[in-house]
Length: 147
Image (tube, rainbow, N blue to C red; front, side, top):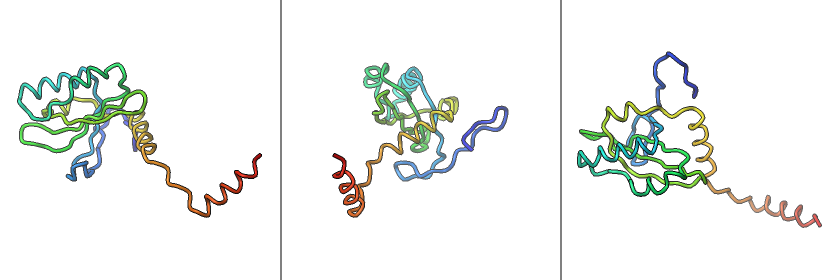
């Protein structure tokens, strides 16, 4: 189930094949701009290679609808994550950010409402499959009779 029951064990996320082909726990966290900027500063302090997109984030901070974080891979001293930035107009993108395991665990899990919204946005990201030729002919025939 997608809903969270209070005072019960934490949500158990499924194992998924991430975008680099590695099976990982499918945890999705929700973060604020301030969280990400703090985590970027931490990555830079540790000289980790994936240090986000701080300039882009500051530039677009007023246009953000959601910032989501998921695991790409577990490294020795940190977790390589993908941060997805969704703008209010539905566009956005993603970037890599290295985060300590401790910091990652403190971030809040994605809530049900955002998860459902994210899933629907994913559905809408696919283009429409064209009508089969017979269906197109029927559509054209019906459309041509309208005045």
